[in-house]
Image 1 (cartoon, helix red, strand yellow):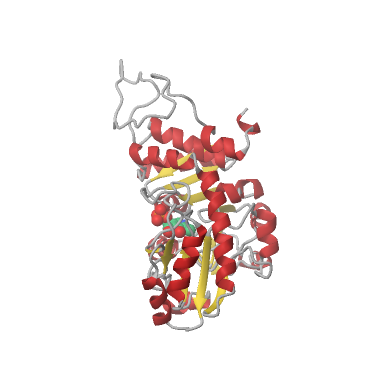
Image 2 (cartoon, rainbow, N blue to C red):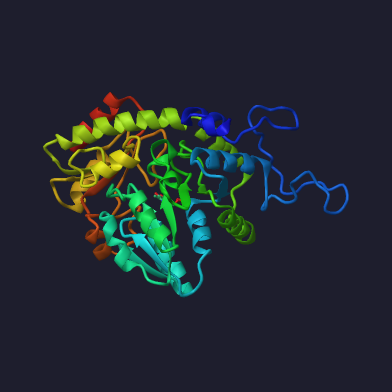
Length: 383
Ligand SMILES: Cc1ncc(COP(=O)(O)O)c(C=O)c1O
């Protein structure tokens, strides 16, 4: 039954059952840390909420369903989810990572896990053929973000998965920007899908959360062990909010895509705009891959102004009225960010600039407001 459901039905019903206690249609918030036992060790499936919680479990099942996985795991943040993946590794292991990725992920890799003896190679993966020459006997994981944050590069998941399968390496994909509405990495051969559920999955900018989804039982057991042993779980209230957010993921994403496209095209024709980065443009270097592996192009856009300076970008973002200048993305409201000083400030300037993150770059998370209002707002800010 579940396997036959279309995506738009899965967002509402995938992995869900009515609450066994009273038949509540929406899974209640089980705000409890512990559960009664009738005799030592005899309980109703739940012992302690770090290990399991019914509200979190309902959400984890929804994550698994949407990504066509078998096992979902929810964490206290996206970075806590990435941290759990890294704990699969041992000192001496090597990771190949796309070089254009969220600044916090880069910071976690280089400032925390390098100190534990894990070696990272940051590689441009726009050409998937690039990856194999960096594989050594010690490579255990390839980490990919696509579309990348903030340059909107597209990486060919299927082509990278062929390399990881050949060399018996794990492939993890950060699917935060695309969401399973647009891209399902497990179907393309990835082993682990990761989300900052803070973003589109939650969708309302009111929760910080992370998710992992896998198909393989052994891998799932290792990750559940780490989730419980390290304890970076999310609480029942936040689980409820994200579960509720997911129920409208498909309708929100449809509008994010429509508004995103209209704004990308508007910016491209604007005399004060230099470059617009959006994978839906036919001349985007990897548009053909985006077209093949995604069902749409999403609501994330980056652009640079012709006044190629920090001040040029600051002038624009400060004038915006409906777009809020803020960190984060993926909520119903439109946000604007300045990657060099905000989301990617933790990456050294020389490294940032190598991947194109100039001081004049602005990133937009296009929300689901009326498109005319959004364009009027950009028009007055750019004028
Ligand atoms: C692509 C991507 N991955 C991971 C993260 C980290 O997630 P969180 O902020 O939920 O820890 C972010 C946060 O902005 C992100 O944009």
